[in-house]
Image 1: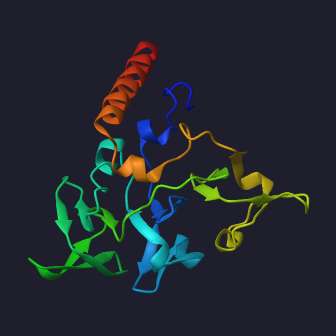
Image 2: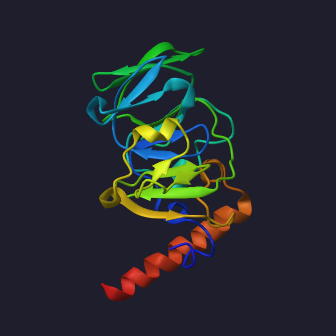
Length: 212
């Protein structure tokens, strides 16, 4: 948990699974199946997010050191070999992403073999009242959560489309600034944070080794 990680949320040690980081810092877990200049579709089209709300799309699980390559204001595709191709996202369909770049023009990149993530636009740091974690790995930041109906509902209109059935919820909490999920910092960690991450990951690996 955050306490064991020295005040950091767990993602600073373990990374994130496939999904979308929104421009305002939430994370929606799920594989992106199609996308264009208006909408990104996840989970076989069962959920969609407007393209203007999409910050970063992860196509595979990424550890913290790879996530740290996705900040700094650059737009483009992070390849699975660690290289970054600057460019503007065009579309995604049939297992392939189209990226427009000054050097290569419009380039197609295979999602399974080549692409690790795409930065559509920068992710901004936010302060949130509620952090809602779902069992599928999603981390939704909300200004308010309404409990008056007997089960939680987002006050934020956009997130109301995600069902908050009790069996889907892992945790709802009012986070402290230090241990809140901070996507902007995860994508562009400070030098001091990188050192802290390295120490925590090494501690976790040593602890696991003792039990093997």
